[in-house]
Length: 115
Image (cartoon, rainbow, N blue to C red; front, side):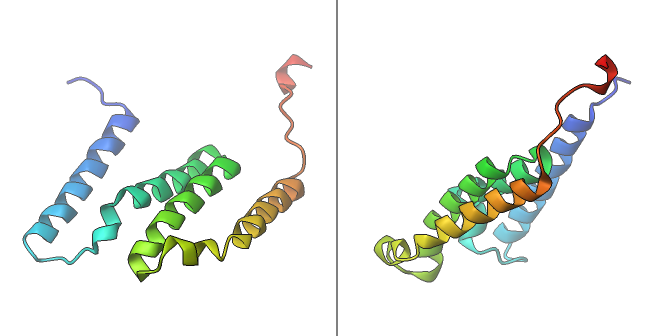
């Protein structure tokens, strides 16, 4: 029997879970809001995955912010113009990311085995 890589196993489990949840929704046994599987939610999920698995804070926060900017007006039925009123939140988020990176200190990329 061929060995299955961890990535393929993980992908298979994710597909089974998503398919099961969608099937339960189609059978009206589970209610899912429409925005759970919308493209802005996928952008937010991608940002979270970048932060969680790749430790790429800047890109992750950018994707989360863009996804949220497109998703919030549809969930709360507000116009994009009203949402634009809160653009200073972007400055706050960028400042927090910069502060976190500064507190982590400089990354040591030097390979200790070459000393």
